[in-house]
Image (cartoon, rainbow, N blue to C red; front, side, top):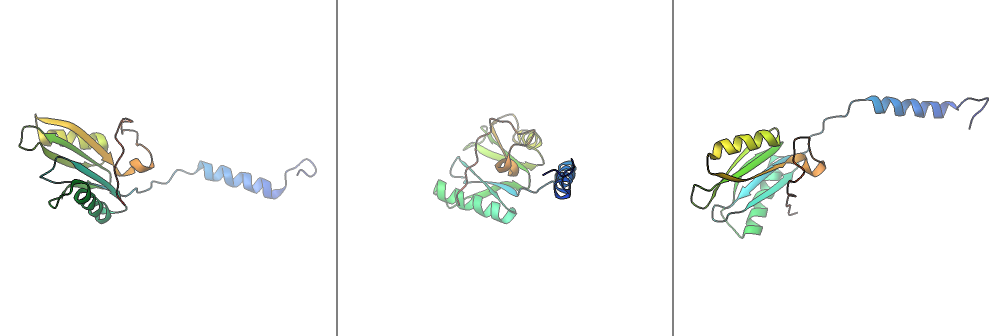
Length: 148
């Protein structure tokens, strides 16, 4: 490939392009929307990640209706980043509280504060979990359920 001890121009150009691309900052991608639904007559959560708010909320409601065999499903919370839920054991039927926030830590802090002293069994999901964990997402988080 070398001529006269030099690399051909096409190889030099390719190497230069690789260096330039590698030096560019990574683009911030939007990873969709996360929603959580629940049926007041059932103590279960149904999470769904969609491309936008409508698809995530519709998916969560459909999944709740199918998996819980319920006709009273409602959206607890939805957002473009993270949603956290805790159960309030001090209320009848272990009432869920849900909050959407920018990070999992912020969502958990807000939802525990909203539920009060009887908050238990915290759970958080983020829209970007399908693409890899964020730095503040615990590695022990449960996988999300999704019905297509």
